[in-house]
Amino acid sequence: MTLRAAPGESGNPMAPAQATAPGAVPVAPPYPTADRAARRAFRPRRVISATVAALALVGIGFVAAVEIVSTLVRRPVHWLPHDRLLSWATTTRWDSPEVLAGGALLVLAGLVLLVLALHAGRCRTVPVRTGDPDLVIGLRPKGFATALAHAAEEVPGVHSAKATVRRGRVSVIARASGWDDDRLSEAVRHAVSARLEALSPVADHRVSVAMKERR
Amino acid sequence: MSTGRANRAGLAILGLLLVVGGGLVLARGLRAFPQNWAPAGVPLVDQPVTDFFATFSPWIWWAFAVLAVIVALVGLRWLVAQGRTETMGEIRVGSGPDGQTTVDSQAVASAASAELSALPAVRTANARLAGDGDQLLLRLRVAADDRVPISVLRHQLTTVTVPHLQQALGADRLQTVARVELERAAPQKRVLQ
Image 1 (tube, rainbow over the protein chains, first blue to last red):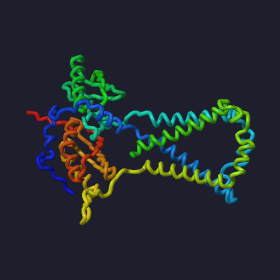
Image 2 (image 1 turned 90 degrees about the vertical axis):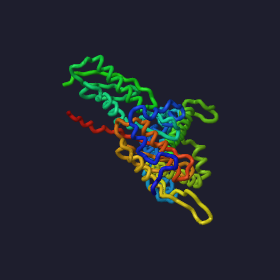
Image 3 (image 1 turned 90 degrees about the horizontal axis):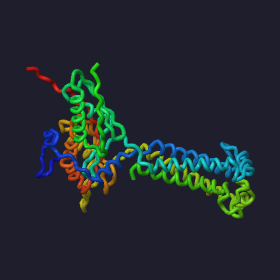
Image 4 (image 1 turned 180 degrees about the horizontal axis):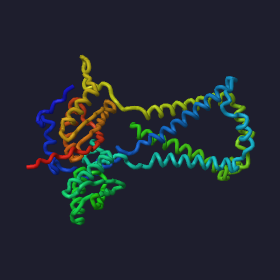
């Protein structure tokens, strides 16, 4: 199926890209609903925890079903030591340390699952501001850091740069030689901040720059 | 419900059951209940428990077996959902007395990918339609030049790609989730004069 431009629109899909100079298309203003939608879209999906929990349910359900049915039809599989378990249960009191420890363990496991379910967790994707709750855009962290390092490298005098992004902080290490460190450091900070603004992440980031002598 | 939301709901329900179950065991062991009703100084399986199972045997055991099968099936369904990819087949865009009009979701998604890929700053784009007839979701994976301002991608999506898809699908609303990989641009060529 071929899609055609709607009448009245720019029929050329290249048109917006021609204005790639920063500022040609305005950066989306803060819009709490859209920002919240972006954060929510990239929340961890808890696949590993869910897989472990699902496997535990399958295992417990399957073993219990086979044990009970096989015993009922008088062909016990004896995967579990029935007699030993029954003997333990008939001699162990509710206030015994084993039972209390078992109860505490269950509560602890339940709390861990509740925390996993309710805690938002750290996004592996950097949500960016779109100003539209129906449009969510996220950047891969590696590419995000690379783009910021690239911005630093475009400052005249900077030979190479490396950027790391962690918990709302962008740390840039730029290598240069024979330049005024303070002035260059400020220029790098300015370039990285400008790039950050163009990428418009939902979360605020602080930029710190360290200059190193080119090796 | 998306897999992420279903996982969190499942973990919350399971966690709650474990907390309540473990809490009841602890409460009985620590003598929090009236001792004439749930004493702590008796074995886990005492005479009343044995009598209860003897009275209702074997039906109680069949009930436990059914419960165990249900637990295993719920676990299996949950497990299968982890590997599920949200995709759609054909989407009905119109119907009348003479029949109905459908479009292949993959063809529509491919058209969207092609449209995005035409942007000079975009290297590759991959689109997939998910959801159901009432709530469509466009999932995009885009690899772009690391110098592209996000506003350009946003502009392309909101003014060209998404409206075209909405038009093709006859949808009033189309939620879009794009994951963008910024890739290092090739160094600019310097011309010596």
